[in-house]
Length: 229
Image (cartoon, rainbow, N blue to C red):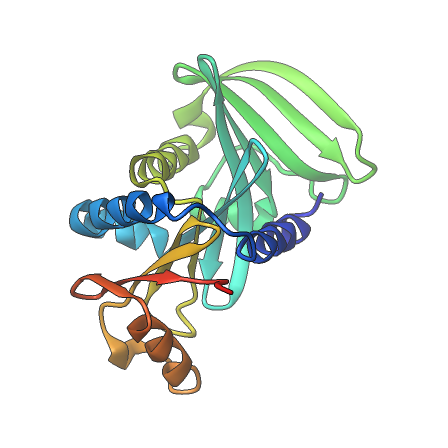
């Protein structure tokens, strides 16, 4: 499935689930997650989440590289036992961030999966535009295939941040404003808004009102309940 459809499905799932009532006992637990995130996440992690937005569908975890209102490329990253798997869509944009000696044939294949064990790429799979998957066993050092920035390191860091702070989705749009929204559950979002002056005037009232309607966790952080009856 194309990344755009996956993201739409994720957003639709969130929209639907926000209408479901959750036990009140979860509110304290969510607030605890919010406090931990707001008090402990560092600037390096926040900057990385300004570049990549997160969403999931089933067991698949997706990261979208964002710039303004544009999704440049999407990746799925997961670990199966001792092997990490990185699936890439829109590789023509991916290689701008992660230069590689590998040639992506985008005229015939829609996505690629690299499987890494220890420091080596051990398998490569490609999915044709007709949905047929092709496998090829290989043995290449990851830092030779990606001589600049190694993508496995970046997406491992992102996954560590996601697991540590227990959010289920994030969003960031620099064209709207310099703020990050963390979805902690389908009913609760935590918004980090460091400077209201950095919000686009066209959307300013909506986002500032939304921020003020939440519970202040600490300066610049608001926990907002959505989808209430």
